[in-house]
Amino acid sequence: MKILVLGAGAVGGYFGGRLIEINQDVTFLVREKRKKYLDKKEINIFSPHGNFSYKPKLIVKGEPIINKFDLVFIACKAYDLNDAISGLSEYIKKDSVLIPLLNGIKHISYLKLIFGENIVWGGFCHLAVKMKSYNIIHSSKYHKLLFGSIGECKSREIIKKEDIILNIISLAKFDTRIPENIMQHMWNKFIYISVLSGITCFFKSKTGPIIKTKCGKNTLYDLLKECTLIANKSKFPIKQSYIQKKLEILLNDNLNLSSSTYEDMVSEGRIESEQIIGDMVNRGRYLELNIPILEMILCHLRIYESNRKV
Image 1 (tube, rainbow, N blue to C red):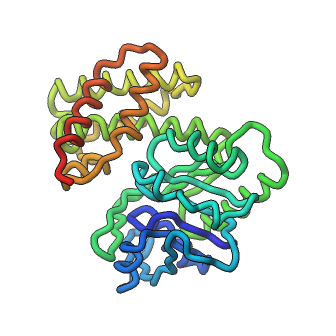
Image 2 (image 1 turned 60 degrees about the vertical axis):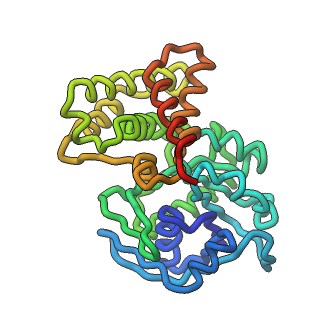
Image 3 (image 1 turned 45 degrees about the horizontal axis):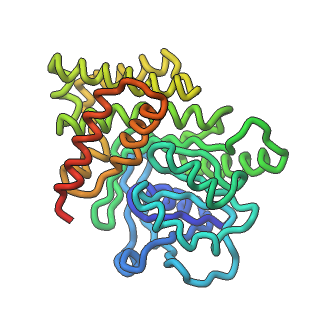
């Protein structure tokens, strides 16, 4: 199976590297500037699941290839999606599979519109990874990737493809499975990352100091209620057991959690404001719900973006 990874940052570089480690045919589609940078050295993975170094096979947009790809993992930042997928059509077949590993759910309908219903599957990963220079550091126990075709009725061909991809990802040391309803699981994660990114970005802090204050803890609860209400009204009800499980994580001051969005703010970088909080707010407005905490956080993020040094 020929595999293309769109993006060679922390997530794409880590996931693609793990596939290369088990001798899969993996190519990375990157920008010209990124290719020149990555061509210089090997990428090094440091992880509790084993260290590994590899020299990535890279192509840039428009570069000719002999055979098109069977499987594509989209691992760019959500705000780079439009640019990243331009020209992707020349590298895929009618029966290729596209699995996006982006934050949020906004991208699913957009990708379906461009590439078609059957090609675009759902997917997400739980990975705490950072990339510094040529080093990818995976420092937590989380090593999960869920995926699957979207829709209630699956053909034999689709089920066969799911099983083949599941086997490959399992060999790459990931905790992986194909849930019955991938979109429900994506909504579950959408709720969690909205709360974690929202609370950390708004208070400009990791969760430890936030939950030690009454105001911080109450804001977290209110934010979770608003996000859960939106999911429930969108016909993706969040189970109470899931909410309780995530609250135990968020309120554990020993963990002192951060979010990728907050880390990007600290480094004065671009953030996924519209793809996570912005999308959640738009859904709430469409449903005519009262979501003052989400509205306030989105305003805060937009002010940051307008003031950010480019």
